[in-house]
Amino acid sequence: MVKVKTEEEIDLMREPNRIVRDCLTFVGERIRAGMTTKEVDTLVYDFIKASGAEPSCLGYCGYPASACVSVNEVVVHGIPDERVLEEGDIVSVDLCAYKNGFHGDGARTFCIGEVSEEKQKLVRVTEECFWKGIEGLKAGTPLYDIGYRVQRHAESNGFSVIRAYTGHGIGREMHEDPSVLNYGRKGTGPRLAKNTVICVEPMIAAGTYRVKVLRDGWTAVTLDKKSAAHYENTLVVREDGVEILTL
Ligand code: MF3
Ligand code: CO
Image 1 (cartoon, rainbow, N blue to C red):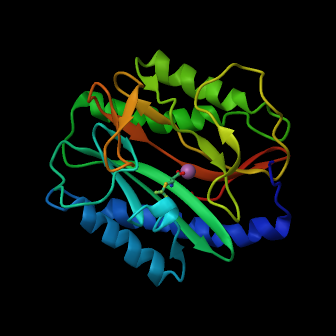
Image 2 (cartoon, rainbow, N blue to C red):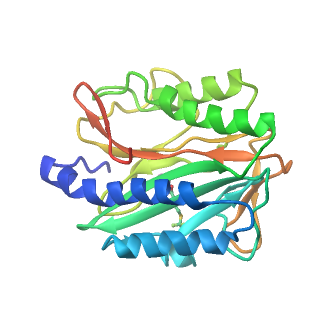
């Protein structure tokens, strides 16, 4: 069931989402070659705590960290560890903050130093997929229009859409209805109601969209080991457009 938010609830959601936004900016300014993914996680934990929020990911279904730090062929849910970031890597950082009784959620993919043209294009197109996905989005839009637009943009650039993970509603729970697929048929799906809060998060791969989860139960990697990128914002569906809470 989709829990449409009241204006008061949306106001309460602004703060955790601003913290997510600012934390992603903070990480983006510091992430560099030589840092371990665990050090990235520490930046995230400290930032969220210092903001008076809780890192929602920590302990979520047993997840052991505050951020998902996913390097190159890792699509999502990379567990921070001693892996050292190297020049040429692309790294997606996905994090959630809990404050005021609500969650905020966002992700960015960062380039470490000089990266290949194909990786640069993948990172750029993944962000563009977000913007294409929400083009024209407003109350009354059929839900699967988002996925249709994301998929069309990804595939027209020679990339593929990860199917195994999706965006989602968000609020008092980190994951609420509806699931927000990154592929789909135009004009289908339930119509989005005004004041629905969703996370739109294209996960786009350079090669196959097929993934497998490693034995740690979390880390999702592409089957062909080619890179994937991730870009996510939390937004409110409004009468006449969207209000993005993590920008
Ligand atoms: N932040 C992720 C999302 O976009 C969820 C992370 S799963 C967790 O939905 F276990 F790490 F919390
Ligand atoms: Co999300």
